[in-house]
Amino acid sequence: MDKEFKNIDEEYSYYSKLYYEKFGRKAFIANPGGTKEKTIEAIKKSLEANKDLLGEIFSPDKDNLY
Image 1 (cartoon, helix red, strand yellow):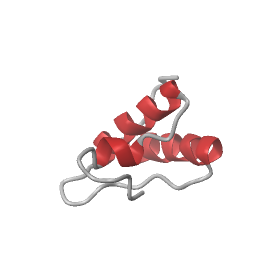
Image 2 (tube, rainbow, N blue to C red):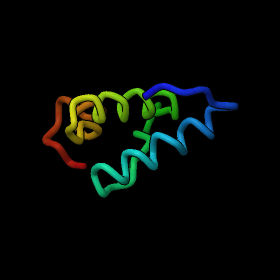
Image 3 (cartoon, one colour):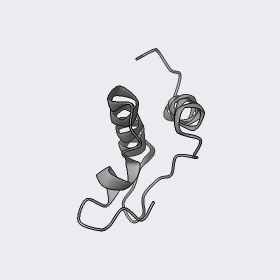
């Protein structure tokens, strides 16, 4: 699943597209303190688990709001 990217924007775009194709939802960068890097890692975990985990990863102490 890993491939070479020229920059973080290209990598984020690639993984966001995969996420959308798999789960039918747009990926989001959690605020405050969210980064594209953290979101990419969360997307990778979701894809590997074959389950939409972004809400659980970004808000583990809250009911899954996402």
